[in-house]
Length: 321
Ligand code: ADP
Ligand code: MG
Image 1 (cartoon, protein in one colour):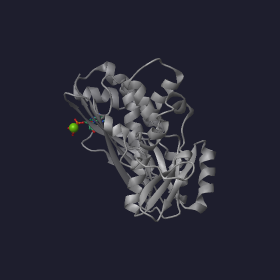
Image 2: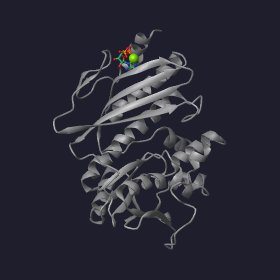
Image 3: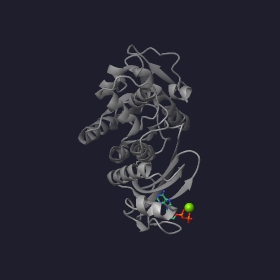
Image 4: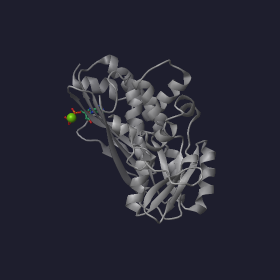
């Protein structure tokens, strides 16, 4: 199968959407940003052996690639619009391409993003890059800077599940519903697009958690020139994580990585409203600590005592890879 045939057969199906004047097929896509909006852009790459295990099912890769990329749009409080996709494939294998393209189209549809172009090449290893483009009201993109002393730190969903899902893939044992759920959290991140957009007017800063809460919160602190206290007892942990990995749950929630949940910073007086909005959307939102004028990141136990050995650099995932 030639390159053009491959593109026509597999990647045309998620090709329409708002603002697409020319999609797949010409030298460039021609795209129109609505008046009063700004374009936000982010790119993510998955490399076989580095970001995913060889033999990972193709539909899982489609979910993971798109989920991780669109999570960056959510972190900016943007609306997803367009996707470009660069694929490096060892071979044009229909048994791989068909399930990958089918799930990609399905997720594009669910996330409201149109595939408008890309590049397809042959190479020794599977490498997948997704560039995502979104819109945000001019001047309203949610940024990492802007956290102020006294603000509260809010986290969406639950943390540590994805790291646990990876553990069950690396060291498989008896499959169970818990295992399936944790693996789903690893493979299929659910970008918090609607939540971020609804909360945006009430927020000072935010980002998505890809390297672990401590590491990513550290980025907010650095660019906002503030510190923070995180309360161990407040971390949102799923029942599945606590049941399956009671010993590691807390550490993975702090530093596991690949959660693709949001870490948001809101002034004290907006917290109630934020919690209400999240509840209306049926999304868990938890206050896990606060921003301080004193620099540095402190993790406090239930008695308010600072824990040692839990700096932002503590990162299981990095140690492994
Ligand atoms: P060019 O040689 O100009 O780079 P290509 O032959 O690579 O063009 O691609 C032809 C068309 O197919 C372009 O519109 C390109 O954006 C699109 N395309 C190529 N690969 C993909 C892909 N994996 N997914 C979506 N569109 C693709
Ligand atoms: Mg090309």
